[in-house]
Amino acid sequence: MDPTFQFQHYLLKSQSLGIYLDIQSRSTRNMSPPKVWTQPGWQEYLSARNAGLPYLPAVAKLSTEVVRILGGNPGNMQLQGTNTYLVGSGQKRILIDTGQGCPIWLTTLVNYLDQHQLSISQVLLTHWHTDHTGGLPALLAQYPHLVAAVHKAHPDRGQHSIRDGQTFTAQGTTLRALFTPGHSQDHMCFILEESGAMFTGDNVLGHGGSVVVEDLGPYMKSLQVMTQGVRNEEITVGYPGHGAVIDDLPAKLIVWSRHWEMREKKVLSAFIGANTKTRASLTTRDIIASLYGPEMEAMAGPFISQVLSKLADEGKVGLAVAGQEKKWFML
Image 1 (spheres, rainbow, N blue to C red):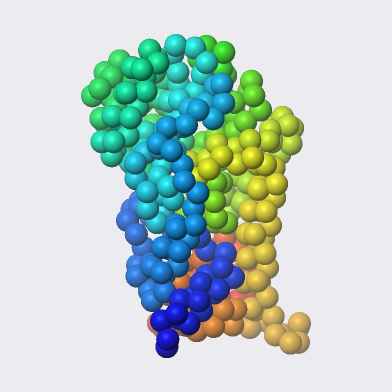
Image 2: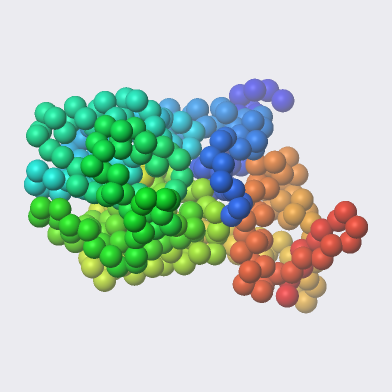
């Protein structure tokens, strides 16, 4: 196949799948690049996508209360890098996330704090993934007083837990935790009460149309929780874990929710033949071939498996095993 045609073919296919970041199984604890990205065309696609991302400066004052400091770790999964945030308007600030552990992040953070005569009072971690927590050891080595001020929903030893609805304050600023599992089992968003904004962590990113998820069912419910929250509190701005500021968070949440709903409907449609009374029994490979073509098995496999797992949890599909063959069927 001509390389140019091959790239365009995979680009169009991947866009039709809506895959911008790989979908992982709920049991994974490894953020290394998945094998699917080694398939022909994927590296070209990811390079083209990343080349189209807007430039983000290493440090940016986004509002009177929010300063973004990039983690210095751009990549296929991290877009321009992990966003970390200093939140507050006084001398003491709250830090949200710590990046992946790249030395440039800590250097940038320390320089900013020194130049503006600021300090960190608390550290809030949106979730356990290493591109958000990897900078913590170096941060604590630099500022030992923070050892007793680290908060995470499912805390590690020495850390404090975060409860849904719990508030954290700095001068002129109140952050309220919103438990939103799915991307990870411990994922938290934070609502900035004074200015009507939400730190969305990795549940919604600044670019693209999909995220890594550990469990699709809770993730979709969390999108609903976030949508209800932004409506009730008239929140418009989102500060994501990766990518640019989201100017219209309510609209983005609607788009992402519908995106996942359409994926589910498409998978379910594979089970129904021309005669709607006939319900097929299909392997995962059969479903992929029906929806996207057999050449997309490697790339679509993780996505299809995630959706099927959610549908099984909801009692909409079942799985039959005969020897080495596994077939899904509608219930």
